[in-house]
Image (cartoon, rainbow, N blue to C red; front, side):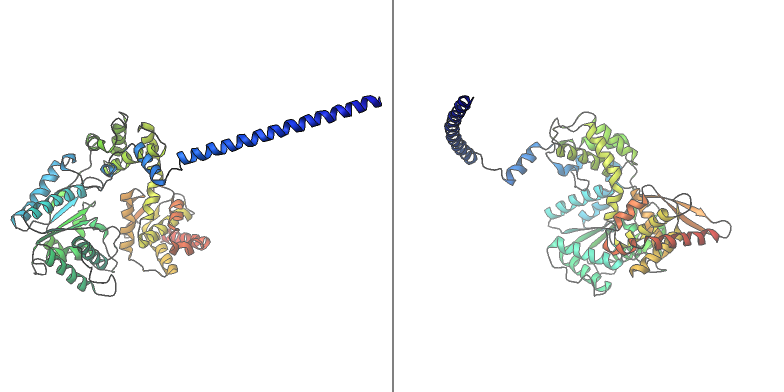
Length: 484
């Protein structure tokens, strides 16, 4: 037995020695292999360096479904052969502005119709051609184009006009944004125009949203139209002046002061909704924004159908067309499909209202927040908001924030404006005999989601922290309203 143990021990020792020798040989072999692999990896690294950011961006560009994405940007000024379904409007605007080329003053214009129906597109395309024709004849034609939606006051509007002209002619603005009178800003505007233009057209997009904030006074847009339309008659502008006002509101002229209406006295150009066939043709005329064979056959008809359901808005059609392409790019797909269109439409429906909220001015955010608070905190059945209640809550919010306070008319104007974006619906209600009329607002989306997004504006954070107090204010005002 002992011999066997010794033999086993010896055998074990022999095996261990063999194993050690073998492991040593294997280890040495592994080292050699590792050295070889390291050398190969080093050579591979030298042969294939890490891709640069530029390389990655270039690769992404090559894989894109787009070849000219600008064609599906809604505000791109496109060639006239791409303009669809607006022959009558185009001919009218051309005929109204043509006198500029003969050295005469063109009439003022009112371009009106629903959003996305080609108002900005047509006036932009025609004025661009006039600029080029005037340049070829040595004449200086100026186009001063502003969007009034984000502008709160007349003073801000005049400064925006000065800034636009200064940027166009490459000179200093010449007046500060604040601290000087509106009259001085007008003088600087006229000075720049007289120095740099022989004739000028002011294009005031979404003019109806420039209401101003003075109590019991005419709206700011009325004053602006009055001043600009009579500037050449008073010799403040030496050249020829035309004003083109663009609006979604067919009743826009009803609120203009009599003097402004007489001075402005525009020629009307109406822009109706696009129908599905026109929307389809608009998209077909921008098909070359995409690579050849990058669109499935049913993509354009489907986009046009979705847009036709959204009241014939070409801007929404183009947004959806572009969005489907972007979604295909994000997923690395080489072809835009119906699925991309449907998913893009779902995202638009979900996010549009909240994205719109982000772009509102502070006063409009406060107005919307107060109105949404009534809908959200109301203990009554339904989420409709009577405008007198919404305004009372708006007043409370502005007091808490120590913010400027608009009139009830301006508050209602701001909230009604949101109906054009699809955030709310409005209706006129009666309080019975002798009780008067008021507006009632109903949210099409989630008022709490809107309130949450608005709170991202730091000025409103303090209000959000007073939820119980806000709720009590809302229900107290509702009770008072319904008991009157």
